[in-house]
Amino acid sequence: MFRVLTLSMTISISMGGTAFASPFVGFEEPMIPISGTAPKGVSGLSISIDSLGASPVDVNAARHAGTMGPEILSLGRSAASVNVYKVAAPSVVVVVSEDGFGSGVLISNGGDIVTNLHVVGNSKTVGIVFKSESESLAGGASSRSARVVKIDRKSDLAIVRVDSVPLGVTPLRLGGVSEVMVGADVHAIGHPTGNTWTYTRGYVSAIRRGFTWNERHEADVIQTQTPINPGNSGGPLLNNDGAVVGINSFKQASSDGLNFAVAADHVRSLMLREEATMKELESHPSSCKESPRLRNSSRNEKDRSNVFLYDINCDEASLFEIKVPDDKKTPISWRFDRNRDKVIDVIIFDEGHDGTFDFSYHDVDFDRKWDLIGYHPDGKMKPTRFVKYNK
Image (tube, rainbow, N blue to C red):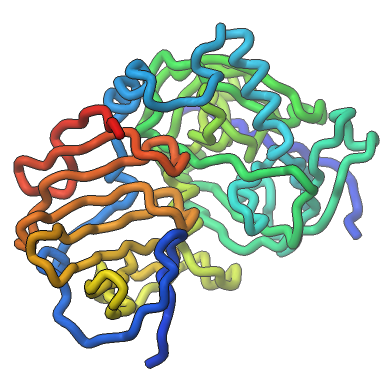
């Protein structure tokens, strides 16, 4: 057992039966409710949207084939670091609570910011400071208040929400453990010991599943040698694409080389929870017995198909759509939105209308362009191999 040091800082501060449309972009034509039979293969199916993506090996193969990845991938290590900071820093904020301050990162267009629960403490509202050009709190930084809307005591995470963000500031994409490999470069941006918007770089030392700390927290964590200190808590751990793969949370007090970030997969799970009171979030009760759960069934006369909209884990933020055409020669398509931006990024096809899967399209980097084709010779939802998508 080692002593754990969390990375927030303490300061003294005051803070002032009708038609409906698909929720997915590009599928917004009105549809008429129906009472048709649900497609085969749904009942009793266990679905994890996060597991539908390509593995790191598949992603790297696509990159080497020139099918994906921003220009940052072709740059040298120093240039890549400069670009990661330039792109990500404006989305990193200072989080100020009654007990102190730490870091946070904007992760949605709706003003959602993730940080550590130990940064927020028992506060119901916190102060948020966005970066100025001078990179200091006194140089024209933009501040506003935020409501604490979701917490997870087990993984030490919290979501706070601002009503508006400064012009030009955009959310960072949430990655996950599937995008992390031991030895890979990672980057941290935060406010160690009050030195705002500090950048550090290191590498992934290990990925530890079900890791426990402080005798009350448990999560999948990324162990890194990236230098972090008090004030970094709640800030992002970034990969070379600038995606958030973890939230910097704690370190071993006796060593500067043992630092830990809670995997971003836990952030995604927390985002899926409905907004609730602090008391309700502590226990997070669920009365839902069926998953996936059919939310709507409809008729799309435009292309003569029935459309079934489901949610996963009884969570209305996590949706997928099944489109069943009248023509048996046209495959049934299962459409998923893995990063919850209301844009379809995985489509899996059932050619025989028999509840088994044959092939799929994957937008790996969420740029609205297909990168890979997946093949399912065993009929299961997860592809056994990928090839490059060619138009």
